[in-house]
Length: 87
Image (cartoon, rainbow, N blue to C red; front, top):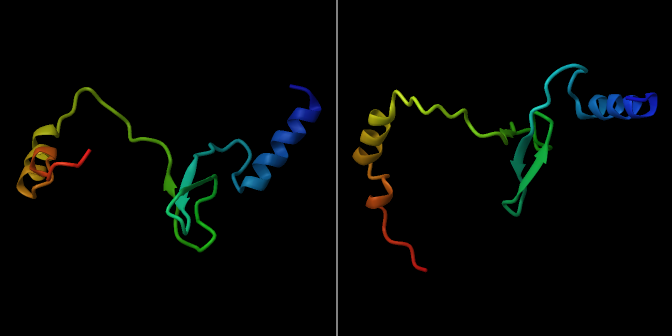
């Protein structure tokens, strides 16, 4: 990496509010229109915390699948318990 590109990335990281050498996690908040606005900051301009834009880790060995399905069934949240969508 040449010195010009190193300087560019150092400035970019410093401007983002993330410490040098730290991990940058993509975050988002919703604007007035309800659209996602992506950022590297931990708080939105209005002071509310931002949400992680990364999906949760997936494990094929899901130990709590039965409990999750039972809770969704109990509270009527399964897709088969929802009213049909109009096409």
